[in-house]
Image 1 (spheres, one colour):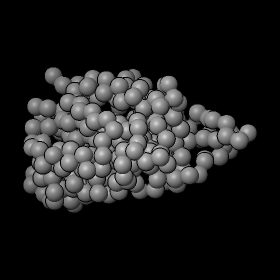
Image 2 (cartoon, helix red, strand yellow):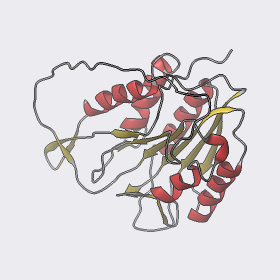
Image 3 (cartoon, helix red, strand yellow):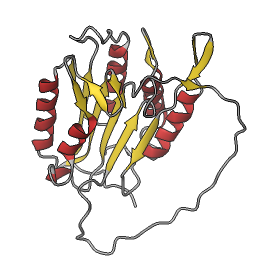
Image 4 (cartoon, helix red, strand yellow):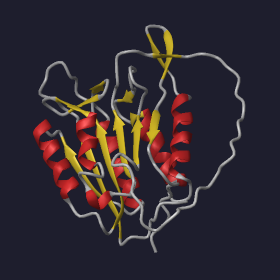
Length: 248
């Protein structure tokens, strides 16, 4: 089964871009505007209405999120929210304070945002999630195959868990650092945008994210004389396959 993607609108995509911070402990994120512009172009190409917000406070970020959660998404396919910022485990940074990721996603649960029930809610976090660096190891590659089993809907009217249909995408696994180039932007967003350009309207989205994971995993940086890597991840609570097929 696939999500219905033939509503009047593709939907809203919010991009919260944090370059500078009022806290001295957080450095300027040079290169993030490149990520913002690339993401804007790619999601507009997929049919989204893209709204960008730069260097907002925690209060301002939560205000915009509450507005989005209270909006009527009945004629939209889905919803996307992206954060480009610093972070730590289970938190991301506004320019003045941290925000718990759970406080963000809870606003869009089915018991809070009725018009997005049964629709994909995609959250993308480009941020560090800790202080550790991922080591490089050598291994052998092998192919795996899985049987896919389709499940038919038993009725036209049914209930779903309030936490269903979320897709959480992270530039790095919990506990680890994420890499960014001061001119070309982050590894993760750069590879995500390139993959969206090539396959965004034809490839199932979680398969696309898996391809992005592979691309990012092949990059490397040298830190204190040792090769370090980055491994993105995603958590899918989707209940159907997701395709951003072209709007007619």
